[in-house]
Structures are given as C-alpha cells and as structure tokens.
Length: 444
Image 1 (spheres, helix red, strand yellow):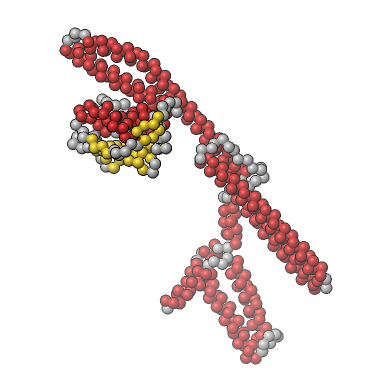
Image 2 (tube, helix red, strand yellow; image 1 turned 135 degrees about the horizontal axis):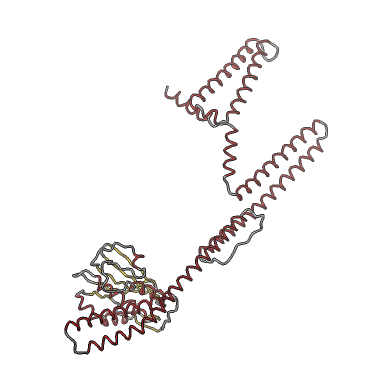
C-alpha cells in the first residue's frame, strides 16, 4: 500500500511539470486515435480482425482508461496547480522576468532569440526544400537550397560569436576600470561605442567616478582648510602666550603673599599646558598636511629608546610605575629622523605612565622581525577601556573620558602621524585591561 502511494506521488509530481496544453493535446490525440482505431477494428473496416482485433481493441480502451486514471491522479495530487501550469502563465512569467532585466541583458537576450529564430527558420526551409523538391523530382536543386541554408546558418552563428566576443572584451574593460577605481584612479574614464551592450553601464560608472572624484576633492579641500586654520591659530596664539608666560615668570619672582603665589603657580601650570596643547596642534597639523620636514640620519634605535627613557626618568620615578625594558644587545641601525621617533616614544611612554594601574609594570620591547624594527609598549590600564582601537587614534580622543586635567588627547594621533611620516606603521591592540602600542619601522 505504501509503495503504491509513493508511486502515485512520484507519478503526479512528474506529471505536474507538464503544461496543461500538453496534457489536453495528449488526451485529444489519445481518445480520437485510440477510440477511432478500436471502433474500426470492432466494425471490421480496417486493422486486425477476429481474436486479435478484440485484444487490440481492449488494449486501446485500457490505455484510454489508464490515461483517465493518470489525469485524475494529477488533479488529486496537484490540485489547482494543474490548471495554473500552462503556457500562457509561463509566457507571462517569462515576460515579467524579461522586463525586469537591465537594458544590456535585454539586448543580449534579443540577439540570442533572433539567432535561434533564424536558425529554426533556416532548418525548416532546408528540410522542406529537400522533401518537396525530391518529391517533385528535383533532388539536386533541393540539396543545393539546403546547403545554402546551412551556410547561412553557420554565417549567422559566426556573426553572433563575433558580437559575443566583442561584448566579453568590453566586459573585461569594465572590470579593469572598476579595478582602477578600487586602486584610487578616479581620473581615467572608460569609453565604448554608443551601440555597445554595456554603454549605459559605462556611462553610469563614469558618472559615479566623477562624483567620487568631486567628493574626494571636497574632502581634501576641507581637510586643508582645517589644517591651515589650526596652523594659523597656533602661530597667532604663540606670541601672546609667550608674553603671558614671561609675565607669569616675573610674577613668580616677586615677593607676594602666599595665597597669591598659589594663584601664580596655577597660572604657570595652566600656561604650560596651553603651550603644550598649541605645540601639539601645530605638530599634528604639519604631520597630517605632508609638510613635515624629516632630518634623515643613521640612528641606533636601541640607543634612541634608552635616551628617551633617560630623559623621562624623573617622570617615571615620580609615578612609581616600574618599567621592564627588553632591548637587543647589538645596535639596531636604520636611517630615519631620530627627533621625530623620539617624540613618538615620548608620547607613548608618557601615556603609559599616566594611565597605568598602580602596582603594575610597563613593558618596553624591541626586536627585529623580517627586516623591520618592532617596538611594543604594553601597560595595564587604570580605567575601563570601552572603546575601539581606531577610536582612540582620533584627534582629541581620550581613553579615560573622566580625566580632563592633563593631556590634550593628541598624543596617540601625533605618534601615529609621525610614525607614518617616518615610513613606519602604527597600531594599537586592546586585550582586556592590557593596552599595547606597536611601532614598526623599516630597517632598510
């Protein structure tokens, strides 16, 4: 019983793939042909007679009844889908799909359909010519007509393949143009013939390229304006700030009451902080505008790090944070700007001192990997680092947002800009409470 149901389900599923018109056509042909043949045998007008005629008639009737069973099975399993699956519905679906395609897809499909239609017409003409002319006694002429049709068919195929090869070549040009845009070339435009399949796509890509070029130009212009503004403000602020600092120093030397001296001390601290902020802004604007002059000399990176640590010895001792320094015994020589790199390490070490958890250590490591000098400075933060690596490298970004009394938020941004200006790579890694700054510098 189970096998019968499985067989019926499989049969119905197979029948469901045929159009309604095909089933109706088979039904008409079957009933007209079979019943007509069976009637002729039974009446004895044609076909086998006697017992054989009866057997053939029974088989014909059985075939007709079996087809009725198959149709009933199809309707019972597939339901309304039997009537929905027809050539009109499929043609409508195909037209909807065709209309939803892009113009270049429609053009390519039209070429294929025209080729198929022409090939079918030529094949019909060739076959009919041979049949008709053979019947008429002109077989040689019929074969000549067929040969001409075959030659025309191959010529049409050749023309189509040539057109298709041109389209494929133009597609390759389009892919190359996209690759150039990906690599930053926004000036080179692509040009194809106006009758090309991809003409509209190329025009859209060129418009997109022009829009991107304009957007990049506007952004660069905006960046230059901001950098120029910062540079000019830094210059303009330096002169009055120098005068303020001088007068604060003079006040500090006067015999003033104790509470006034406290005020002067606070003024001195704030003046120094403002002075450092302005200098940081000035340095950062030069680094990001590609106007940073480099003094390239041969330096020993080990010695440079040791000198930087020595210059910051008082700050490190006052912090109470122990440093674990691991440097190679042999010199790590390279040609670079020692002053700029010293500023990078000063900023990183200063950050480590300010933001390290008391009782933890700061690890400074230098090693040579694949012809690169890799410097890592790692510390345990004294605050929750709920930010992404790229966010902390933005200008004026602070890891500890609650701390506003020291620092400018420019230290890491300057370190990154100076490292890249010196031909290196700068990266930040955060793992739990562990903060690691990595500087990679080429040895050659």
